[in-house]
Image 1: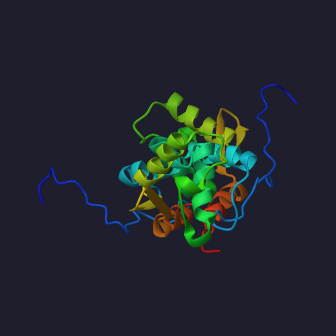
Image 2: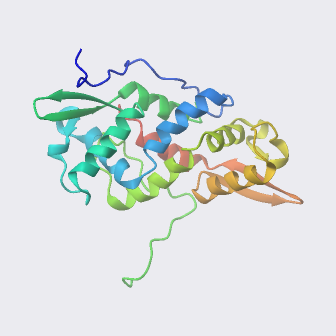
Length: 117
Length: 117
């Protein structure tokens, strides 16, 4: 594996997903989950996440994203932050890095907020 | 309606709740929703939110919360931030302010992340 290869996130790694109404969150889980919510806590980043989530074929690269009002390096920076938080996975193909939503991670966040369950 | 008039958020109004996979988020909705996610993007605040959400009777006041490792004024500050973001509602009764989860707002956040829908 070369140094340029991107880290692979295990698809099953969802730290917790019991609804917040059913039990108090542990200190450890609150650190992990807060980092995920924080990743969506910026308007530009949230829009970028929605662009990837709603993209045709379920994936997008920086080359697909022009209309968010920030520069391409800034788009790359935000997408990387979303990947580091576990919300996106990435794959390099040729010149570009393609991003996809990590469905189980996002499902874990949704489950946490599903207070009626 | 004049150009200067700002949109009024009804207390029960959830600005958007179509899953992010179904459509790209608008600029306006991304600002509103990012503020909500940001409110949960701090480990202590997320734990406090989980304490309120899982509290007996569905409500809690600062007087009920001792074990998060921060001072009572800090707890109050965080609860106020969660209320300002729309995630909690509050009611003063005597000396204390009691907090409850705003279920429709939190349901809107969960719906946004429900990518399989």
